Amino acid sequence: MRGIKGAAACLLAAALTAALPFSAMAANGTKITSISLRIESHITAGDSSSDVRVTSNSSRYDVDEVEVTNEPKDEWEGRDKPKLKVTLTAGDRYYFPSSGLTKSDVNLSGDDGKVTSVSRSGSYTFYVNITLDALDDENDYDLHVDGLEWDDSDGNAYWDDAEDAKRYEVRLYRGGNSVTSVVSTSDTSYDFSSHFTQSGYYYFRVRGVYNASNKGSWEESDERYVSSSEAADIRRNARNTSSSPTSSTSPSTSGGPGVYSGAWLRDDVGWWYCNADKSYTTNNWQYINNYWYFFDERGYMKTGWILWNGKWYYCCENGEMLHDTTTPDGYYVGSDGAWVQ
Image (cartoon, rainbow, N blue to C red; front, side, top):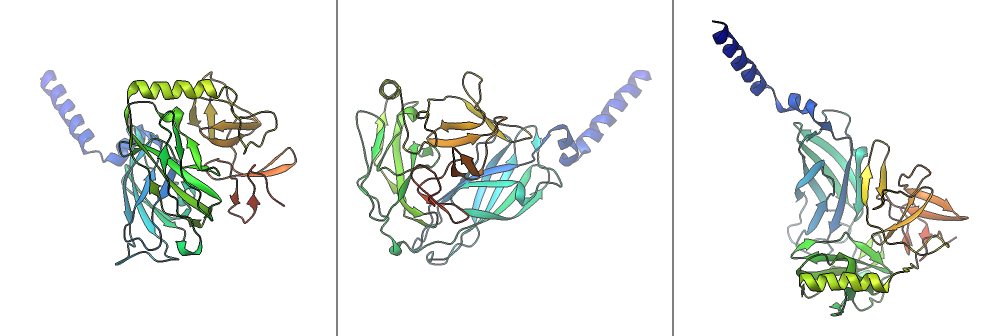
C-alpha cells in the first residue's frame, strides 16, 4: 500500500507542476530589466517599400518580428513618421517581469526614433512600439552615392563623394546577413579587412548623410567572393600595415586608437568593455570597432556630454562619440568630436 500511495503522490505532484502557468515557472529564471535595440531604416520619402530592421546583440531576448504599422497606400512622403511594432521573445532562462519594465528601460541606437509604449504578453513575449523621426525630402540635398567598388587586394571599400554629404554610413554584409553594425565615416572609403573572418560573398551598403534628419538612400555594391585563405590573407596584411593606427576623430592627444579584441559586458550598473587580456579602461577613451567610447573611473561606459582636456564631447545612447554632426540637443561637433563653439 505504501508503494501505491507513493506513486499516487508523485503523479499528483507532476500534475500540479504541469498545471502551473508559465509566469509562475518564470520565477526560476532571470528577470529582464532593460532592453537595447538598434534600428536600421531604409525608408525614405518616395519609397513604396518599408525596409526597416531592428536587431539586438543580447542573449537575454531575441527580436522575433518587426511590423510597420502605418504603411502608406502608395508611397512614403516627406514628414511621414514610420511606426514600428517590435516583438521580442525571452531567451532560455530569462523572462519579462509583470511590472517594472517600462519604455524608459528601452534604449535605442542607430536611426533616430523614440519608444512610445511597451506591453507584455505572458512572461516570454514583449512588445515595443517605436515612432521613427519624420522622413525628409531628399530633393533638398544631393546625397546620392555611386561608384561603389572594392579594392581587390584588401578589404577596402570605396565610393564617390556625394555633393551635400557631410559624412557617410556604411555597413558590411556576407551572404545577405550583416557582418558589422552601421559605421559612420567622413571619408569616401572604409577598411573592412578585420571583418573578413570566413569565406563567402561580401558586399557593402553606403548612404550619404547631411545630418541626423537628412540621409540619402542606401546604395549597394557588387558581391565579392572571398575564400577562407583569401580572408586570412586580408586580415593578416591589414595587421601588418596598421601596427600604429591613428584616427582623425581621436579625442586623445596621447596617441591613436589601439587594436582591441574583447567583449561588451553588462551588470546592474551599466556597460563595460573587457579586453582580451581581461583589462578594462578607466577614466579614459577607448577605440572599439571604429568608434570612440568613454569609460568612467570605475570602467563603465558613459553617455551624453563629456568634458575632456578642456573640450566637450558628446556620446550618444549606445556610447558612440559623435562627430561632424549636430547633437540631439542642438550643438554642432566637429571632425574631432569636440563641440564647435
